Length: 307
Image (tube, rainbow, N blue to C red):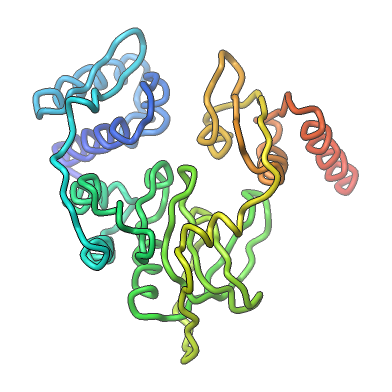
């Protein structure tokens, strides 16, 4: 890739990362999360970030750097509202199958993101595709393209699914209905052929999607958001953890830092236990005590099995 193209890609990644952030981010967050910065030395990164912020400000993006933080003043950077019918929003959301190579950064750089930011996704309750937030930074464009094609054509698909980062892959079959965002995570929603029930799968855990011949595609019968909420709902807890940010990203995305501790509110208990175990020793639950004890018990059990 030419140096000029790399600069354009880096500036675009930075702009959309800051626009998608709910609060100001540290320089280290930018360095670890935004493509184009992580391989630079400390000095080179500092100079590059300062130069890039100045560049996107000249382009009209009200970005700011102050006291070790960087952000975009969104109140000064809003597009005029655009209204679409449900049918129009569906077509716009699926246009082109989001079919560019690489990560969804390519999608973020396209005109469709501007349309979505203007309000197209407000009418996506029953549409095949909903906008994603944090997962857009890491979700494969190939995955979205494959799912979108199956949704559009009412085509059954098979895929590999890994329930947790350390779990073995499972081969699953489903009639896909769309991709839905919930709590900054993206889920592929549809009819699980093996379980004969509605199911949702974390999109980042899905790979190797293949079309499956079938004449019995099961359509959705209710809003996809309801399907996701029902399929992942479980006991919720508030928790405090100590984590290593660059390793335990799944946990970090669901909380906020209070000093050195990660604070999580209203997260699914079972998910927290499984995820904390999968990221050990880079994540340690401090509270609540019963969750901490369950995580420690599972880790001890795993250690005993290995012995």
